[in-house]
Amino acid sequence: EPEVTQTPSHQVTQMGQEVILRCVPISNHLYFYWYRQILGQKVEFLVSFYNNEISEKSEIFDDQFSVERPDGSNFTLKIRSTKLEDSAMYFCASSELGGAAEQYFGPGTRLTVT
Amino acid sequence: AQTVTQSQPEMSVQEAETVTLSCTYDTSESDYYLFWYKQPPSRQMILVIRQEAYKQQNATENRFSVNFQKAAKSFSLKISDSQLGDAAMYFCAYRSPAYSGAGSYQLTFGKGTKLSVIP
Image 1 (cartoon, rainbow over the protein chains, first blue to last red):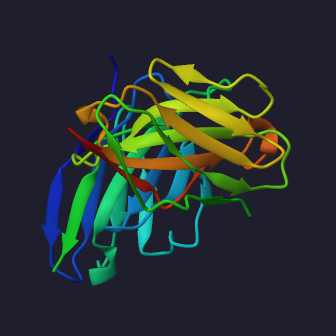
Image 2 (image 1 turned 180 degrees about the vertical axis):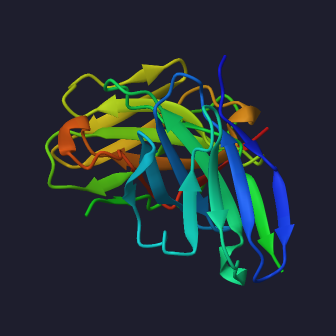
Image 3 (image 1 turned 45 degrees about the horizontal axis):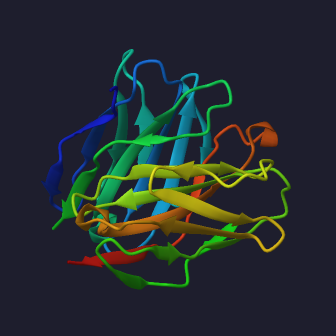
């Protein structure tokens, strides 16, 4: 069964550094998403991406964040100048076009900023 | 803006018994989607069940079923014949309809209910 994959599973970085989180969505899906879950809290929407551009973003997704689909398979989240409060689980998700409502999540990347 | 509330931070159930997890939501839309996601200790988000608001029939997936009360804006999850593998965080989530024009279909999650299964 097709699945969303994410790399790395765990990333440790120092405050102020840049990180890139990678995702490979399900191959025939056209909508892509990033969500964040700070430990012990609910999952929060960051951004959605369709047709090579951001379709919607939350208040959390400020200039520190960017997304890109550099090729036909990868979808990346870049966090510039990381802060301690960026420590969280980051989930990538994808969904089909055409009215299908399910979003399929990847296993997540645990980001630890020290 | 839509909000999702899960009023039970933790629940427990005996193995083989039935448990119901509560979820309420607030929206001004008449058509939308509701979901239950399971997050085991591995922290991966797994879709359990979905419900379209325009469907009156409650969704069922094997041992999982929902009680969707649109007027009350309530969407509870019933797990029958609970198994040890059901132990996890369960998140209720809301999504706007496909024609909402937002173009993003973002999910709005509740804070979750931690379910423990007692052998």
